[in-house]
Every structure is written in C-alpha cells, then in structure tokens.
Image 1 (cartoon, rainbow, N blue to C red):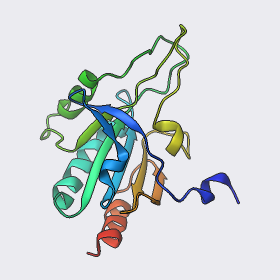
Image 2: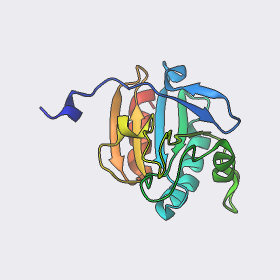
Image 3: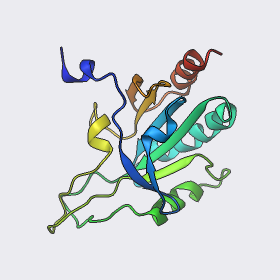
Length: 167
C-alpha cells in the first residue's frame, strides 16, 4: 500500500487566519471541510476561488466549512521567510470584481532560519499528494480524507459534499 492510501485521518495543522488569529483544523471536527490549497500567483487558483465562493454560499450553515490555505511553494528562489502573511490573505479575499470571498482564509507561511528561505510549511506537506496547485481536499466529519484532487471540479465538490451531509 502506498503511504497515501494508508492516510485516512485528517492531519491537524495550526496556521494564522486573515485577522492574525491562530487557527487549528481540528476546530472543524464534526463538519465536512473543503480545504483549498492555493497560491496568490496561480491563475487557476484565482478562478477556482470565485467558483468556491458560489459553492460556499450554497453550503454554509449546513454542516460544511471551507478554508483556503494560501502559500507560495517557490521557497528556494527568493527569501519567502514569513510569507504569505495575513495581509496577503485579506488581498486574496477581495482581489476580484466578484463578491468578496466570505469563507476562511489561512496562511501557510514559510518559517526559515536561513536565506534564501527553504523553510517548512505546516499544512501543505501534509496534504500534498499531487505537487500541484490548486489542490483540494474534502474531509469528512471525523476529519478523514474522503476526496482529493489536483485542480478543481465544481461538480465533483458538490457531489462529495452532498454525499457527506446527506443531501
């Protein structure tokens, strides 16, 4: 068995949200959770964020949570120490002409002691099955992985969320 097929429990991580508050994935235990791993510079991620907002509007208040985790995986070229920041999460939420994004945004900042920064991220390595952004993971109410894909598919997301919440 591959290490990924053995991975059925959601692996917890602690990050900082848009407002600088420390947040923990296990806060969402008991709800289905869509975790969107995206980067600011990624055009498909930006397109996906608008689609996710529409999906979120249909599912919020129904036992489902969404969180975008933004990061920049290019840690070896420039000094990305401490980036992205909560301010970048705020820009992520309001960057398009469509309605502001109302679901959670957390930052997976590189933590480095050297320059250039080649620091570790807290969340991305735990769910990086494909090495691609965006990557999306849907966790069941026990925070076990029930769905994962590189890229995005509104139809697939809705089907899995409906399966999990019994709609």
